Amino acid sequence: MNLATSNKMAGKTCCSGRRILIGICVVQLVATLERQVFDFLGYMWMPIVANFFQIMLVIFGLFGTFQYRPKYLVTYVVWSVLYIGWNVLVICLYLEVGNLSIANNSAILNLGTSSRSWWYDNGIACDSGNGTAMQAHVATTSSVSGCLLGYEYVETLHAALQILFSVLGFIFGCYVIHVFNEEDDSFAFVGGFDPLSAYSPPTKTSHMQLQPITY
Image 1 (cartoon, rainbow, N blue to C red):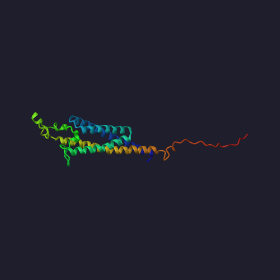
Image 2: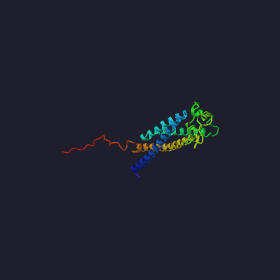
Image 3: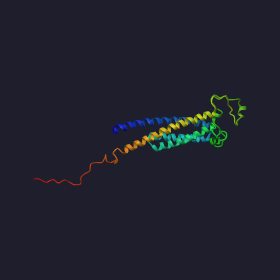
Image 4: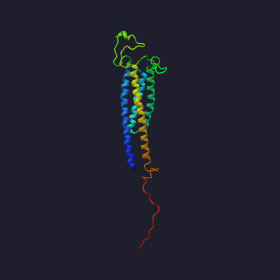
């Protein structure tokens, strides 16, 4: 296989990987913006901050993919790992895994403002209850009942989707970084170990050949 064919195949592979990563980043942006809206409605300040960084770093990933900037992609990949950890913590809080409890550790999410998830009182397919009589029951019980899906499961699904997108973004981000670095190496060694050897102009001889003059 000659150099031109291998470069052509590498270019096709790179383009397909870039397209997939761009698609993942676009879906991440849409999902994060949707999540951000509901976190703002519930005044969940720590998730709002995490979503803000997620939006910013996904834009970094898009820019790095479009502009062939591996450093931006490295930042996006590192953040993806941190964001996966954050969403795992959110799932553990809402599902009360181990010693974690949303009732006792809610300050992690609302920064001590006593706010709670918007889905707590606005669940999917829920009954609104008895109006003000039910609204007075605020401490531990939601003012709605008969929900198709409890608020804790809605928040868990949001976090699980973000974990899925972040894992895919991490995998394809590492792949595209690898392809970018391989392309840089192939361009650097086009002329062998000496990049100027293939393009050096012919040297001029410093000695002139003397010919006898005949009359």
